[in-house]
Image 1 (cartoon, rainbow, N blue to C red):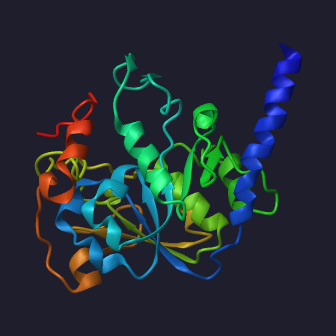
Image 2 (image 1 turned 180 degrees about the horizontal axis):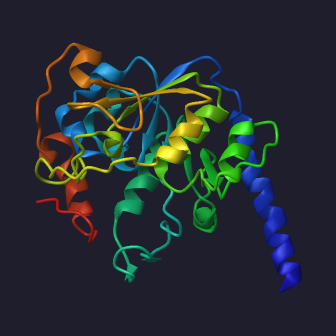
Length: 271
């Protein structure tokens, strides 16, 4: 067993080091990180085509994602791309849904987009545009990773932390967050692909320790539907784009086939 472990870690180390190929690849640039928050329902994404995009989770299935300059896509859920997977947080059951099939289709159709996921998915994902991540990036030249480690901050704890960390590693100088609603004072729960407007559910101090460290290395602004942020500098969608917010329902934002696939997940209310 000890020999097998050594072999596995040696192999995985080579796999994980592939992320080094994107180091400093965007020095001095600005980017958008776009998440799945329900505020996206009020935004016209065509106004965010001017910068590279790091897409989180299911935003790639939004109809207007075709207007975005998506360079990177992140879906971190471990063990997710197997026929069935263990939901360790919510249902604590073995589950099966079709979302992994949607991601597989996206990965194959967009070889120009680098897709990041958890190392546990490696045995069942083999496309050349996939990067695997686990725990940290072992690069001693990057003080940001060291500072996060010393302060107990896991850079892969969630998709936002992962995206911000990768943006710093790639040399971006500025990030604008969209649909990262937990960073908003007037936060609503739910996602853009779920039915309804969501319910106000503030998350005061969301990931403040992480953002306090990250803001030493990169400028971060969160774009809100209304109001400000209690953890980051912010600007409203209207002030940023010059456009008024306008609500659209989920059925207007993605294909019905995708919504039907999402209904098979126990966490979402789609219809």
